[in-house]
Length: 306
Ligand SMILES: [Zn+2]
Image (cartoon, rainbow, N blue to C red; front, side):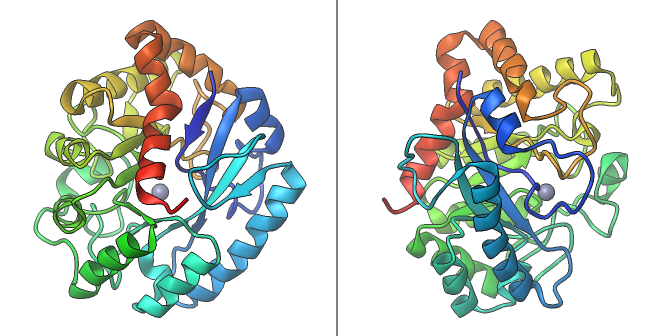
């Protein structure tokens, strides 16, 4: 079964064993891989994303991938450029337009720190794991510039990504957009308490808007049990919960490969058929296909210009 992955960090990873390579994607039968230009620091963020956009072209050539800027996918394993952290636009809508011109078609509004656009899901720097429990941001959402950014992204045809954003940021973005948006790499807070995961209310708002949630494979968001069997059970539990709460049209995949320590159950993109077979067993073929690629492609088609 083919699949679409809404988030990985292979583009900005500097060393180590890569979980996403052209070979791994082809082995896994990937149809489309999103590659995030991730910027942590605000200083010089725009210039770094411009450099990553160039590196994306080089990566596609080297790995034998077909770069795309719309939901129309030619033959081969396709690749889409995204941005992780709206700090990349440095508080300027002109810079946002420029990123669109460079081929960026999806952007997380925040990462783990507050930026010009809005507030992250966590308070302070304890991003991962249990630190998130008491550190969840509940009060603050988008700034005035953040609201303008969301409106401009909608006009341009760029997918708004609320992963890493606060609950309030998600709700406010949903109100402004009135159309599908995504949480490209997140899990379910009701299954595993973590500030990076979505509340049931968040899941419903994304589903009501016709959007999708890419399920993240970061063990720290999934379960205390880091064994392969434990991670497998956890991923299926998160998936089942998200489908229960948001329906069969809301779940998609957002591996977070190369941005996370290796997951013992899904080590690389080449392991994806294992997960898709499990989805087939749990949900049946029709829904498994929706999770694997149909839901994600629907949202890309709704948001991006042809
Ligand atoms: Zn991330």
